[in-house]
Amino acid sequence: MEAIVEGIILAAGLSKRMGVPKTLIEFDGDTVIGRVLKASLGSDLHRVVLVTGSSGLKAVEATEADSGPRLSIVVNPSPEKGMSSSLRIGLAAVSSDAKGAMVLLADQPFIAAEIIDRLLSFFRLHDDKIIVPVIGGRRTTPVIFPARLFLELMSVEGDVGGRDVLKGHPAEIEQVEMGSCYEDMDLDTPEDLDKLMGRTSQDTSYRSARTTPTAVIARASSPKQSRR
Image 1 (tube, rainbow, N blue to C red):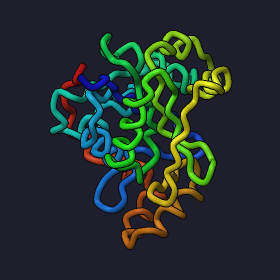
Image 2 (cartoon, rainbow, N blue to C red):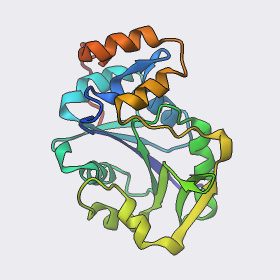
Image 3 (tube, rainbow, N blue to C red):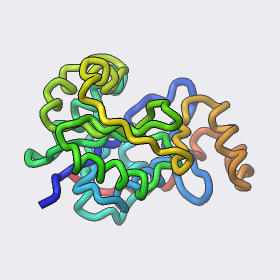
Image 4 (cartoon, rainbow, N blue to C red):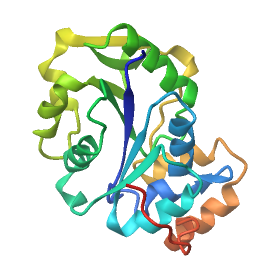
């Protein structure tokens, strides 16, 4: 039986540098979080736990209305406490029989199911290791942590995520070179968004979103019942 690995998508960030909810920005026919969800749910991850803030809950639920039982949505009531608070809440929602958890960022629009599955295949060969993708030797995300490190991850404070745990276990890291098959761009600033929109012809809707922040919140007016 293959080791069970579940995904945790960290989507409760406050988007302070962006100025609008970056995960709900639309481009190329979908929202950023919608793309991350589809990649995760289209992969071999056993389940996916989406951690969102209370202010974005309805919009995120509406983004992926037909996700099925593999998606659980949990709310971080205090996202201002940093990424580690979302990681703690996500880990608490992971199944007790999971051998590992993949930590995904909600603002990487080019993550793909094939990338996730490649990392999963390495973890299943080395399920006592931390699986870290690299591009030209540069470490990136998503990262898979074995279950034995969950308690340590839950003790992390601030806006560092699993970075401190990686620093504390250098000999236990298995790096996977992704090469040119993975575009790991993430969205933090309006300049990042300019770069993203340079890759698609749909920049008209983007300019509208920049001038009207509520325009980037897709399908937020159709609340769905939270999946737990």
